[in-house]
Length: 261
Image (tube, helix red, strand yellow):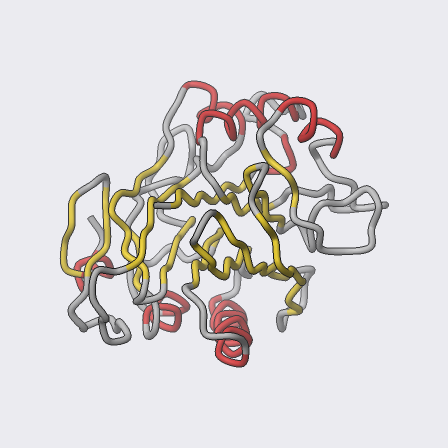
């Protein structure tokens, strides 16, 4: 079983308006996931330096940033980054260029943890609904052209609705894992952060990481899911198809994910 997580870390700036990379690393330690997708991991201007100095990962965490670009001070691509627990094998990684009018992108990697090999995509989609759907289709097209692997898609989808839009596009071939409300961290009312899993993976548990530290470290709370190989082959999931997803350990029909809980 592998635990994955996604976290919009807001460039390390907490609700107290202080940039505190050590605080973010502490939240990541609380998460204790095997693979983490970060959004807003790099500063926006200049050298696009990582909001967490790279040496701090080695000295104060159990994680290694997945190599993505040639920028010496950055750990991501347009703010998207992937972290793996030390000891995991990263077979390959690359940035995905997405259709957009503003700096947006996604990152992907093939990762092996023990006997499990899977593809992970981290993303931060546009605030425009039309652009989000274009970006979702670009990500799905990229996946379809690659190796047939169990796949996790996760990140800040910027989708306020509980159904339709990019959720429909991703949900046509992936299970929507219901983690719960992650935004705003002070009072979570929206599910902007999402995790999707291919049908050959099963989410056995999922949720939002809520702690006093996480409530201060960013305007988003981290989300997580524990996944394993599906017991039996399931057909591609659609908004109305049968399937399962996890929400804090309870298994429910996939269709209810699009109605909100």
